[in-house]
Amino acid sequence: MTRPEIRAATLGGIRAAAGVPLLLVGGGMSGFGALAHDIGFTGWEAVLATVAVWALPAQVVAAEMHAAGADLTAIAIAAALTSMRFFPMAVALLPTFGSDVGPLGRITQAHLMSATSWAFMMRASVPQDPGPRRAYHSAFTITCLSVAAIATLAGYLGAAALPAPLALGLLFLNAAFFMVLLADSRNRQALLAVALGALLCWPIHTVLPEASLVLAGVVGGTLAFVFGNRLRHPA
Amino acid sequence: MTGAPHDALTVVLATAAATFVWRALGALLVGRVDPDGAVVRWFTLTSYALLAALVVRLVGLPTGSLAQVPSAIRLGAVVVTLAVWWLTRRSPLPAVLAGSACIVAAAALMAES
Image (tube, rainbow over all chains, first blue to last red; front, top):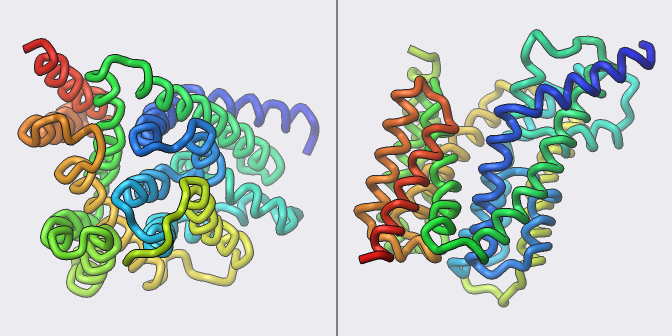
């Protein structure tokens, strides 16, 4: 592999990020910033959450549960349940970066990885050679992460300074993003899990408000796992 | 579950650790697990159900400022989000913007009257 190849891959990664991925990341993270402001985080805690967690569902779940007064263990369990997806994603993606990457390099790429970057790396148009592929992924994800950090702060400051109606619109972004994400599943077993989680949340919430997310998730997910197996393949 | 009060920074660090564990585990176990196995499938379904419950809580049982918006309007914004998503052949951005615009417009109208 040569230097120009790496440079071309780096530029390619930045160019691929600068489009719909950055709009999605910017919108989602400004919603999180607004939420963080609403529940009393400081601005730098909000930005730290984006950079250190780098997973919108875990961030919003944690912020929501913290605001509702949930226990730290319950928050960590809920965050871990939503973030488990990174495990199979890392297992599938990291080998394509070559065998000469050490554990530290692998863990770094695994931290930079997001659902969006993962989906992009599965496309045929990205570099397939390990070296340029790694450069492409680094450039793509670091671009997204930088914009995410700025958007978090912008959403945070926006929630503080914008007229109230606009600030409320920013807060709604979180729910709207997850709705389209969940609706986009073409797998009917996953849609069953979504329906069960939504239906179970309300009744559980009236009895055990602090545990409603984790319980609705585990019970809904398990029911869909046990009874929805024949729905697994897309219609 | 009533633990000791904890500050926001602790929550952020605990959430970061809970997410990082999976990334690191994936990095270390590359080539030794089946990413399509039953355990992974259970976790995926559970996270879908949990996120659906999160949407219900964010929209239906809001704890913060969103509670100022009447529930009928919040529900209307949900319907608009999903309808635009469907009509634009599953493009996320117009759907998300339309749903949030509903909240902004309704809140602005309420503030005026």
